[in-house]
Length: 177
Image 1 (cartoon, rainbow, N blue to C red):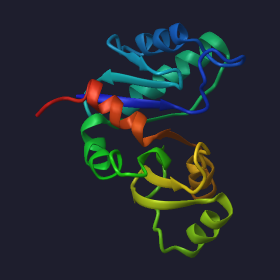
Image 2 (image 1 turned 135 degrees about the horizontal axis):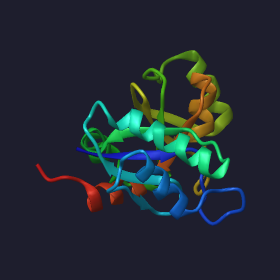
Image 3 (image 1 turned 120 degrees about the vertical axis):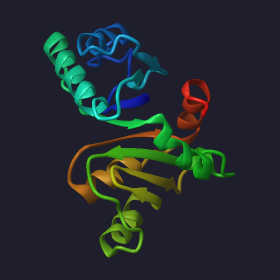
């Protein structure tokens, strides 16, 4: 089964960030020999059994930290599990304003008063959510507010990618059924 790993706070090519070669070497060190990066934002696609994907991705970030001194969080999901999210949000007329955020928390409720308060201040709206993921609509073009919104709500790190990026990733790497 194919999975995607979103490394938090990675911008390959920028000072203080791991290189593509370092990221791939860390995934190989974790036993994920077919890992491929997608774009330069810490997105990695790899194959693993469903129950092994998260532990192996965690092993990869440990290997990355050991090799580079750069500690990063990682969040994984199967490409199959992302398909319905992309079908609903990836091709909407305002898809370029939508972000998919992966995290380790529970599903968020859009009618929760805490969510409503944080949304107002963050200039974005929670559209959809499940355990470990959320789709957020940004109110300002070219401004990504999903990660800070979700991090404030769950009290722990998260990592986001634009919905068009996730849609293209599935088009390129998704498994046909």
